[in-house]
Image 1 (cartoon, rainbow, N blue to C red):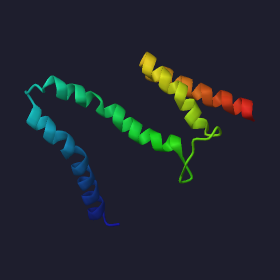
Image 2 (cartoon, helix red, strand yellow):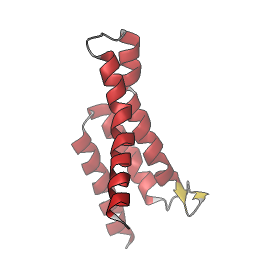
Image 3 (cartoon, rainbow, N blue to C red):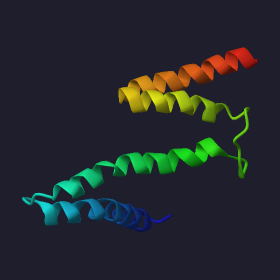
Image 4 (tube, rainbow, N blue to C red):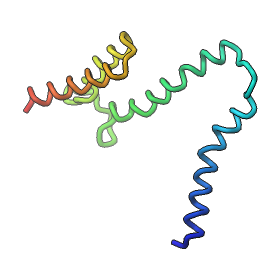
Length: 108
């Protein structure tokens, strides 16, 4: 690839990455958002994480897998409970990893 193509690609990627972040920040600078909008926006990260995580938990080789041998789904249930109750990312990850390790140790 020519250097010009690489530089233009990098510039384009930077533009489409940062413009959607900068434009709202510029327009909303110095303004206070309504409380209902702030509350609604607080759920966006959780919704994005769920949208990214759920397909990897439920779909195996193009098919929905809700069977007993879906190890990650079974590990996600107690990890999700810990996340809900304790609101601790570290605790959630540790519980999920421990469940997977224990099931793999027992099932080998």
